[in-house]
Image (cartoon, rainbow, N blue to C red):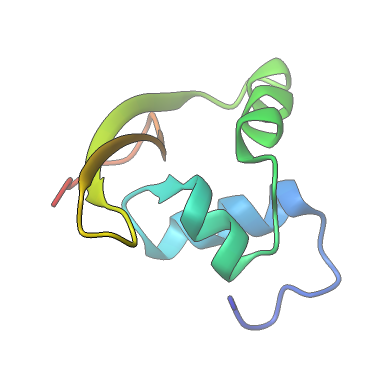
Length: 82
C-alpha cells in the first residue's frame, strides 16, 4: 500500500502512485490503493482535464498465461513499459 495517503481520495492516491511509478494497472490499483474501479477514476480525472495515456500491456495471470490489461500513465510523463 502506498504510504501516507490513507486519508486522500482515490484520485489523489492514483496521482501520488504515478509520481513514483511509470504507469498503473487495475491490479496495481487494487493491491496498492484498494481501488476496484480504476477506469472510472481515470475517467473522472480526464473530465477534470488531467491527461492520461491508455496503453495495453501484457502480463501473466495466476496460471502463467499471458493476457492483456490496460495501463494508464500521466500524459506529461515519460513512460517506461516493461
